[in-house]
Image (cartoon, rainbow, N blue to C red; front, side, top):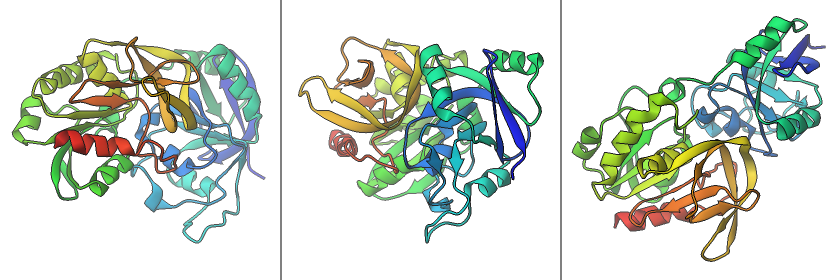
Length: 347
């Protein structure tokens, strides 16, 4: 039997469960995701930097750990919460179980708690911080959770050097704010040569590369965090070049800010592989994979969330951006055509 461990929320509510992964303490912002599959892509998505991931689907880990499915080499999340982690995965590609994998990466988790109740608390009260600890939580632990902030997010996950990822064809500069591997793979599959650039690459350096298109990746944190201001300035300059730009998730938010839009934090965000969005012109609905806690404030959106009406996409003519993940490797694949649109606009 696994050792006892606890989760204390900043509002004082305590859950008692079993240790999962590394048996120590960690504090972070708790966010829930509704995906039934794709837990490996979720765990390795850099956009979860500073957060404790709560899986609403009760059984996680049943097909094991498959490194070739990872979205990045490292795990950026602070912790992991599941109800029933599978101890005996069944998959010919599996190279281990979830518990052992988390322990090997020094990631703290908790299992066996009422994840439905925890999700309801977050839906009703909004995203909140929490602390996973192997000892009975104290008032000091609760206060520590309340003080926690996700800061310096993009620089913490963005690569430090320029890297040619691969492919051949149209030259695409990928501004990497914490990119999922699936973005570059999708571009390569559409006949593009992809080169990744650090988040703080200047506009002049990007233009010197002479790209035919500029890809803005996903990434973590608040887009309006002051440390991101230079990134917005860079995009404003790149926007004037006339080179087509395609933004995803954080890239969508930063490009919108460069265009004069503002952003705001959602009550509990959109995370999961079953998020419906609608094209406001055609009325067509697509099912998408999403992972974001902030939204662009817009009354002229191209795409909107069916659930709450928030902005899911903006079309600027030559450039465009979307809040969701059209490259989602865990699916769905409804919006993969957006990569074709990007290639067409480069033409």
